[in-house]
Image (tube, rainbow over all chains, first blue to last red; front, side, top):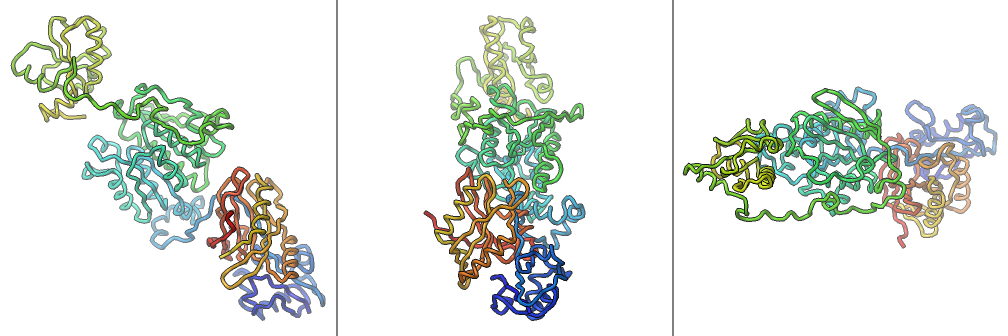
Length: 481
Length: 141
């Protein structure tokens, strides 16, 4: 006869008894008698194969039966058997899935994932329980949003305040021709919902700012930066460092791109790589310098791959490595990045403890001065240029754009001298002739006018608004680009 | 629902903060009254994990057995296990889940920068595949 002590939570299966006297000559026999007497206890203590569950320890008096003779350990009269769980744990390992199963439709949808052991059911559930914030639904955000949705990310936040424009369509494939004029958020959400209706989409119709970034980012496991301006890059970086969330970074320009993972604990952040922003205007944006339409597909999908690896916990991530991609050479290079212990954001003694004014940090006035109404000194309106032409007034229309822009469109009768060539070709111009300079929007031609005035030309004017204004006000057949 | 008395709560938080940046662990003793688990006292225990204890803990079954005996002697029950997560949130991690047991409430205390931040309680299933969040009430000062 031995006494078995029943732990509190199991007493609901032992008719509320806290201890039970049972007969048996071995531990196995006593436990057998116990589960015969209380069949509901069997499921608690034994698994389907009839083995003690992994967390169940049985003690004979003060000794673990594993170190005696296990089930065959002899039991004498007056012995006490105790059931004690083994318990351990720790924060190591990502929080587990609160959603513990997939529907049959989802199992079919993700079958090519499920049959790979590196993903499997556990990985697919991780993806379903993961949340990702896409900052921007443009060039990078488009492939990111589409592929991450298809892969089964459970919840996606989209941040964008922009409207789909014709100039977006050569690369932002999440938006279609029919979407021009719609909010990018709505267009992107429709495409994502069509690809995978299981994705929960959360829309933020706003510009990410120091006021809202922490509040928005804190709701997501991974933040993906798909923007192309420096203030937002620093903002996303600092928010991720402060929130201890990985920032999956990508950038594109013309034929080249970069990607890495910043702000992963122990790894470098964007400020470790670029402590200071470049002077405003030095690094052109894609709108100014152009971008190969396919390029964001490659870079965005490198970012998507990193996000999926971070969620699955597989492979070698880009933490501490910056991938540089050159589409013309079709070459990938890699730079090692280290966390800078002196970094103001992620260093040992950080000085950035809250978000700052990133426009100011990047040297951009937070309030752009409004464009002066009317025509300023030294400028001429396109309407007046057209009248001069029609009236046959003698003047030279000087186009200072690049030759490849001239091939897109030009104003009849204009002479092309690219701004950069002007100093060496200035002798082609006559100081006696009135000159009207133009470019795409008026910025470069203003520089040309300044240069010519310094070179002694008196009768020079800048055509306000450039060829874009010409297309708007004079000749809509001239395409805008 | 699990409700923790002030004295027990102070013992748990003090133990968790004292062991920072390591994880701490211990047992919660009390009474079950219908749907409410009432924690009357907490017993700090030694973290018996063999490796680095920054993100791991292990309870000795012998310590639990002793705690269970003392609880019975006092007419009380062992009703929960607590441990801390230094510098991260009070979620129930994969490691927590895979080494859990469905019989007890698992209270996780998030300790950030050495100070208590927040806590959650979980009820793992028998297969160790999922844990349900349980309402946790502690005395807020």
